[in-house]
Image (cartoon, rainbow, N blue to C red; front, side, top):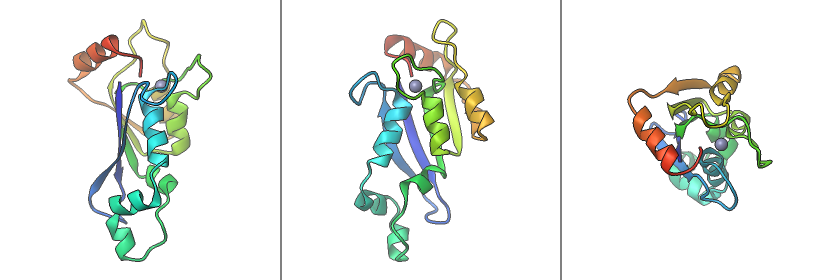
Length: 150
Ligand SMILES: [Zn+2]
């Protein structure tokens, strides 16, 4: 499953910036797309960040802080972020809440035969706007069943 983090930080740049993409099991272990995307975003070097947000460098502003950027970030993910992990890793919904992302666009809810999911509820409770993307359910579900859980 896949996840993209898109920053919209108008006080720094009018452009939308793709911070990171994540895929299930891309990083070692049974890792999920959202958590992997967050990890990759946090691993961006100051140089990479200043290339992504060139206006901040021009204005000689202090080095941009990824945690600050994440608060201006929208998440696009194929599956509803999970709320329960049996592996001991933090659930993706909690990781997104902790990062205080702004909005979460979800392709499809977790199917009933997957683990019971409260990811969207948990995000909403933390005042992250949840948007269910219409029309992609079939594609997202097919991808989920071919591959892994998001
Ligand atoms: Zn997950």
